[in-house]
Length: 343
Image (cartoon, rainbow, N blue to C red; front, side, top):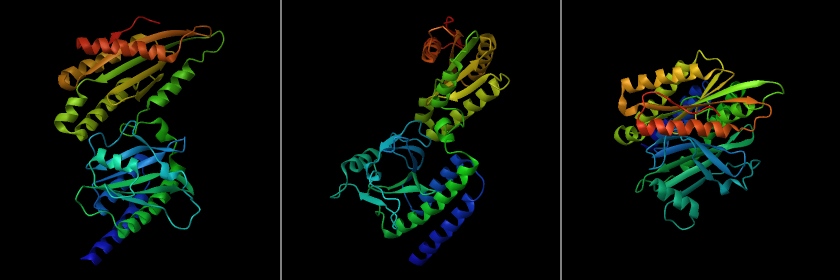
């Protein structure tokens, strides 16, 4: 039985290497790897995280398996301090892994708290190294009462990380890793950071020029209820459907960028474009959502401003105005967008 298990893991590594050699987006590559590790490690959950620019924390990209109360598959902002990485010596011959059992002597306080919050009994984690540089972490858990991770699990994880690291190095040549910093992993839309960067550039008006900017803020009214009633997978599918509708709705407006800036929040930013087509398209999108399913309908707010070199106005003021209009639309259950007074 043990021999069959070992052979299964070897075949798993071979299959993983073949799968990750195919050209995929970074998001699908990481998701595929996490699912394979979940199955072969017989884990309750597996997470893949990336080191933040500060070098002392990691941001979770994907969670798979039986997730904790606050976990979602594609988190917006799930970060952890990773003290054990601070003294990691990447030039060492032996890989470094950590495995902990909840409640046992010697477990770090932060790991004990994390396992309690996740409702898990043991964990296994290791650094993910890409092209000789620390890239992130793979973190696996098992349920309370389940057999804890052993040396065979550690050996498998180390081989798994070597394959995944090689695949990420190849992906780096095809899709810059910086893409993760500026795109929402669930929808592929721009994230808040990217929208803020676009807005910053838009507000840099050259001398003698005049520029109009518009912001559409949209919100899914029934996302939490969908998650509670049907599960997070259904909620993720709802978010993806809305993202697709947004892209299709505003595709003809070349001066627009579309982003997901929160769990159920989306933003459309336009530059050098009249507000009228923004409002018209937003109204059509919102009306369709109410006709399709009032329990998951959209609400929207629109704000605009005319910028000149000497106009003292910041992007956040326009975003706040659109958000305020959105809140009015939500409160009054409007089936069209609420338009704020021009700034």
